[in-house]
Length: 445
Image (cartoon, rainbow, N blue to C red; front, top):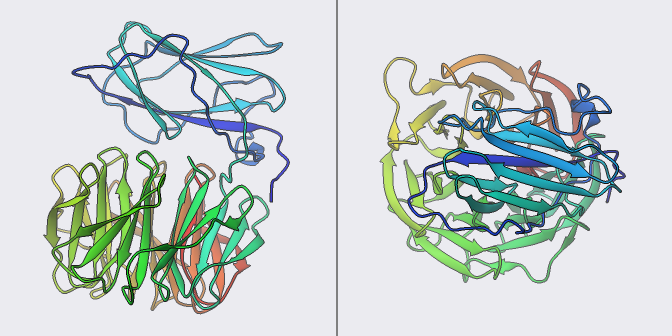
């Protein structure tokens, strides 16, 4: 379902680094940028009708001063708008009015060499003093749409983030559990636990594309899904595939590669797109760290016999949060050293049988679904202490966050619903009925 929009938005993320050898980009280089088509005015009420390049928020710390990076937005019948990129903000939200031509000019004036990620269409390397132009092509993308894997009804429920209602239900394979989205390609990947396959959904028309991708010959029971939108790789945890395997799917060819791990039952996974690492929670008692460049296990952390279930990465702080179902805690890993944080307060005590976890990098809050207690623990990422607990539905499992509108979505497996939490107040503002036994959930962002 394509929604009529008032404004269209583009997110730019800038990573600053000194490049040892910088590949050049011609000044007339053109980049096609896929834009979402949704009315964002509800959460950008501070934008006036005359604003064209504003409402900046931090999603990743910028380590050096890049105040000389200038971004200019021009268009038909408008005065060019120039905005200097601030040193403490790494993401800029652009407002584009449909039907009007827009051209983006990115100029690195006297700054260090930088690497620019245009949405997930990167990297584009700019030398000092260089200028790049990007022609903006508007196309439909399912930004903000929520996808719920219903393991009891073999379907995926699609929830519209504006109306908080189910707008479509798609039949996939047997017992779908994990789900991951790629906004760059507008694809949704669903792990079918009973069929040993991954279904691929086209987000533009909500249809399953071709035959499901096989991840094993039989009985490996895929469960968790994580997508690296920069490299266009999909990582799938398999419970019983011989060799303790995470399967990597190439998002272009749909070909698979097995990644052998040192322990069994990889369940929940998450990706750090900045460091290109994949973190896989292994139910047998460890956390596997996968090098996304080589797609091999680089190291493993012994978590004890605590049944690690899911993991979530905060790319801003470079911390990884791992739910430990066996002792009702969340462990925290320093992503720079890939070492467990220890001492007073670690691991973090949460509710009974924590399953899903997700991070809001903007507010630096972590949300944990406590399956046995029917609630969600909210952790302050600056102190790694529990702030409060939110009551949701029966047997919550999955958690997904839209950090732009600050909404948290929690699947309630025992109730067949999704609780929607307003992250600004940390209260439940709506409950949506979905399929039977919803498991994992993801947001197209």
